[in-house]
Image 1 (cartoon, rainbow, N blue to C red):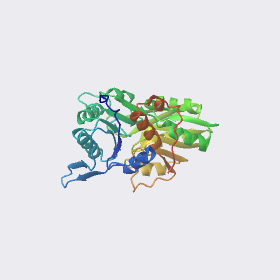
Image 2 (image 1 turned 45 degrees about the vertical axis):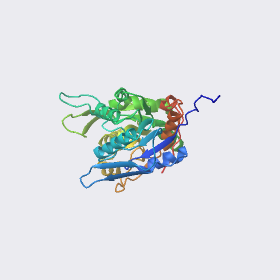
Image 3 (image 1 turned 60 degrees about the vertical axis):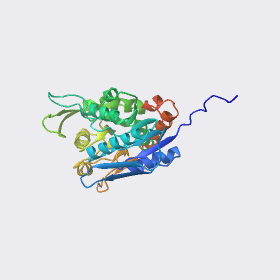
Image 4 (image 1 turned 135 degrees about the horizontal axis):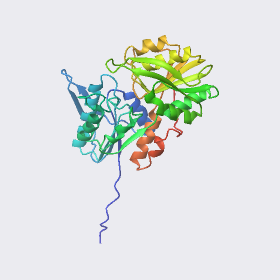
Length: 333
């Protein structure tokens, strides 16, 4: 009598890369011991994007890695089309790996008649066919609830903190939040390194984007190594004003650490004009080749992402990777 039992399903891990930051996707794939799936991605003369995968993806566990630097809308659209192509080609499960979540700063309404664009992005991912999202250091934690499905929120803090602790030590260090909105992040750093916390009190003018007014330093910084921490550096106004305020308050030296190097103009000019000892980023976003930032160090986030993908694919636990006190190693480049 023939055996009617079905053979166990063999899962297939496939990694796909958009064109925004293929170096990161390649590094992640190498760490997982797989090759990027060959894909044809082109932009037509009118800027429309075309995607076709050159291998069968039927029944696979697909992970689409796409960073979202400027121009943000172009890379978001490419990512959505990649996900749609996978869904229509019968991929079994589709995970969007978006290290820097686009429109993350538009997470709530500050004034009437404003959008909540971070929610819209989550809806677009779901509509395109994404079953899961993996991201690093969301600007606002409530974005986790915007997606109708699992969203794995990874922390880049261990990658950055391990480097800072090894290079600078913690004897005379103070962690500095550049504004009230980053106090929770700075508190995580303080707990991780077991050092004091200081805060820069500032005010935003809601009518003028990317401009701030620094008021005062709250905390003990005189004669100390001050580490300014933030989830992202965009035009660098916040971290540079914070550094100048700290130095005026007697800080011995100032360094900065941030997960996402957005670095819109005039970020490079501002950072180079500010007496930082060092500015430290991860490679969640590619650095533009034309940016020349003195004393900048870039650490790889690929090991963290690779571990998250490994856990998701094997139905393991990603929770331990969320914990900012975890031990995740990164490499400097």
